[in-house]
Image (cartoon, each protein chain N blue to C red):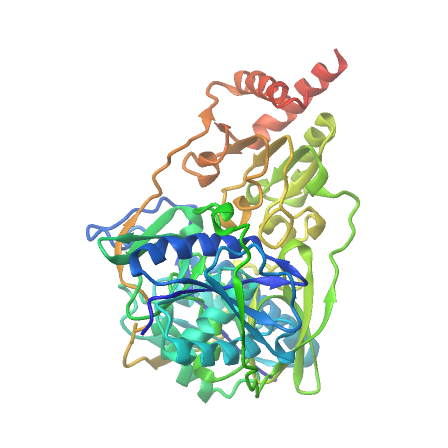
Length: 254
Length: 324
């Protein structure tokens, strides 16, 4: 079983986001990039399958700031092979370009299964998983929160609204968009990551062209104009508590 | 090339999803500019009654046994044929478990541009425009819907579903049964949601926790307040994904929609996947350390304060009021 996990770094939403001078993109100068949280779940799910069945796990990502940490962390969790893609990614790249760029590389790795995060918060032209599945001509199921494998197929549990799950049988090779791994992404100690850095190599592959055809052109990016805003309760903890008691009474629950 | 707006109706087990009506409302916005028709596209098998309140000029009903349950393969094959034959201006999907599986795949297979996470669409001087939400609702991106044809996924929140409903049932045009081959995905079974100790959809007081709760042990603080108020603890996705609360307590796109008298959001930033399920609440109160958290634009009252400082004292005061 050969599992490929393409992952991407996205802006950390805990930080304040600012729009750049062009007015059409985020200002990347001060952006802190972190792994897309759903991709983190995809890595976890791949490692779980490896632990159960002895699968070989390759994690690949684009060469932007923070990628080495991301890849070494994946290795410390149990990934077998790390690949960094070199290209002109710093100015931002849409999902169509990214999916096209990694299609040949993923194909060359002859996967049985490709696991991606189901989505990322900055997807404006679709999701990497189903785009990649389209280019690879593989079947795709997204919003997956766990699966089992038998006889050349996976039985994936797809989430629908209201807690309903659909069990779907998918012929391999396939791409799955992971909503949540069967257990929370594991924590690895920094010391273990440092150790891995000494013994693990990140392979590099060049991406010649980035073709963004298929995504929209952004004419303007802005922060949502807030038409309505909460009445803010100010003061020290005591005052806030007193006011909240009044609010509970207003709501008719106290 | 037609100027029609095709809305791919989302339905599951005999129920039309609310996003379908939001999309129909969006379709009417766009049709004002294109002069085309708003066409509902219904895929399924032996469906009846689903289309009676769709605000569409007509329904194109693709009926085939392979479409009895949703799979992206069957939808791709059926829609590819339909799109190639009719060349609509826009084909719209929900930004949902179903729509996300289909739209990107079609974009890749057919070489059609795709704009996702659209919250609003409108016509501006003859051009069709979109406004998409990104970064958990903190950023909006605006642009033109690529011509001559584009695929769109819509999120709720921007347009009222009532605008996509009609009392006049639209004409249903049954499309010739298409050959659907090479289906690699099959539905085995549905797994019903767990029946939990409580049904959060029916509770009148929800003390809801998000990522800000930090760890499992802290949940007790929220639980204490919920008990004092006679309510229960619910949560956003990260708390359930961490295994700190069962999925029966999940409020949001993949969990439950709630409508309590009061929804107290503790350390919940207010990502769209969560907020779409709480708009039915009578009152939303948000406590967060981030003064620009999107939840504050939805809440009636808010406070920028550390919940760990607040909760013990607040619980104590609620108890005192109850006792007096």
